[in-house]
Length: 442
Picture 1 (cartoon, rainbow, N blue to C red):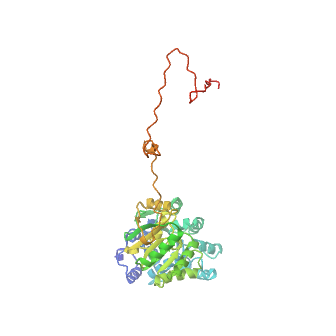
Picture 2: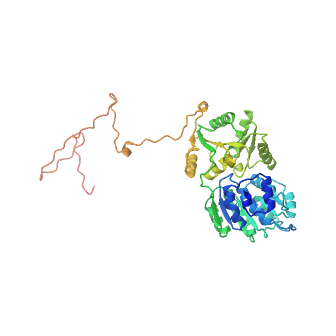
């Protein structure tokens, strides 16, 4: 029960109102040290309750007598607009019985409207790096009094090229008393360097191994001959699998647009989501999916992080993701909170090496599947047979007439000359023309 934590009664009331009965393992591990003010570096699988694990301690630290809001007291930095919007909703749900106010600053929204919101000085600011830097450059944003800094999905922010922006924002929060860094993966060298520079005597919590996706998710691959074959496979899966909601991931915006058009032509109800979409269209796509107005979303990796949609039980990788971390985040959209799900990756010859590297990264092998109606000719790389030399045997020549191995040619015996005799003259192979003996000078 959440009552085991030393949380303010108003937060416990909100938790009860939201029907949060038992805390998840990451919440049990992270909330107590976060309440004590420790810096945390937490790795936990997607859908495990990380957001509540940092929000409840953060809100608890801001509780007390209502004070005039004259400074931003907490900053939550996230990689994408969708994840930021989702986090704002969670903050509002948990703080519904408090006087704590929160605001959102992301790209795609009116800059002047956001500037007006910031002038009201919210207690908690939720933001993406790019737009936050724009407000800092405008000289109207002061982060010097931030008490708690949360970096959620920091590895993704670095992957997206926000390293300098994030470092600058961290530098503006120089008076912070606590930093919390949460992610679903361990990230690379850049993230480890950031952890070493930013966190002060941190407690490292790792709640899952890198390959631990939800146990309820089946992971399959289907081989395909080419892009057109993949498109037919996607249509077959969406028409024949049993699912409530599905996401089809592509690696490029152009492919997402093409695939969504093909599916719409086949009378599927589809929305498309990628980075070039207008913010209103992105919001609409996610809301329609959540509400069930559409069952299928075709998206790039912009939807792979933090997107939490109830009933999403099918993920199709039209293109294999470029890294193991990206695969974990895509597949993590299904099978959340103990639910079951299916993840299918379509693999042609250009995807095989990527798929193999992801299997090695996750230390597991995906289930191979064949759709009889659409079985192609490609089934993976051909095994190279060992040559005779490599196998330790020589390949024998076959007789064209008998198709049997030819016997090895017998060597003619050569006469040995007695000692003291003159050397025999050299002759050509036909034994007729004499050959000149080579001297050392030649």
